[in-house]
Length: 121
Image (cartoon, rainbow, N blue to C red; front, side, top):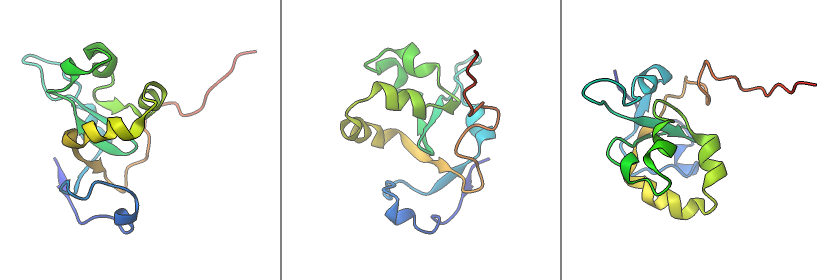
């Protein structure tokens, strides 16, 4: 279920693309968009709290479909940051894939994602 709400306070100052309708999603909704199933379903991913529909794009991804497709249904902020040096150029191409943002009540990371790095001695 997609929720439509007015923009959160301060959104205009956050650098968000305000030309995109304000649509808010939960991690549960995003987690269902992995592309798995028959027929293949939607593929969504999250980068910096923004939700992108990569269903039609992932096969054309310059780094390969598996590189981006494996992050469908999840947060891809870390790999996006690691692999894209010129973020301004890449974000220009991503604008057409933007479908909304994480709802304000959703954490910035997936609830089941381990945010701490454990180092073994």
